[in-house]
Image (tube, helix red, strand yellow):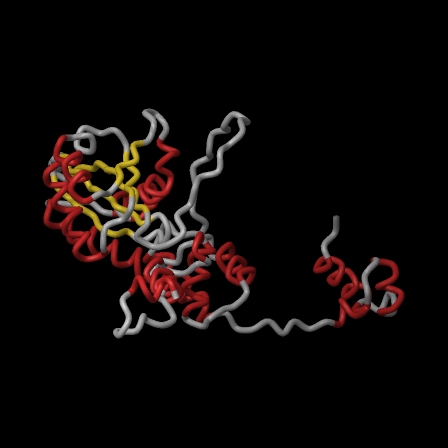
Length: 294
């Protein structure tokens, strides 16, 4: 199939050589005269190209939709197709792994929480320093806001250490009703059992060999490894903690999340907190029980 740009050149050749008039040349080639006479009024994309390349260099694992969300926040672009055109022209495509085909079996819908701090998910991710020493990162995610509530980085994390870390997060954010977790030795330890009994938080263990039941944290783990761990070569545990802490702030406060309408999780959490606030507090003259009965 001959593209319109090629047909325009053919018409221009026939007309410039005085072989045919423009009307007859367009009829012969099969193109409208308005298309031949059209002059492009495309805007200058120099500033947008420069900023797009800067963001792509800063976040090499972000696709064009994620970069478009950043550009849209800065007021540089509105149409995602324009961003995609420049993204492909600059050769900024991110190479992705081809997913293996899964068997066609009925899928059970996952029950979603209805508000913030209703359900958390946690899981461990392992990596190593430049010296070859292994370390682990505990990731805790709010399933409703997709916000990373906390991360604990160390070479070894016991059940008692995990319980103390959850208490610290509870003082800062409040504890959820339940926590989704796998069957690792730290998570099934006596310390976690006693912590659950003391706080009243339900520990919802997934079935062995089915990480999809902990999908929110598993999805976060993939993003965390792809955008943080695989992009850095840590020389020490102190450096790893510092870099991971900065990345968590970026993830919560700046990085657009596709499941939240390309809003950062912290922004989404603030909007939801305002929505769930009661319109008016109960009067101080009446007890809460009487207020509810009335």
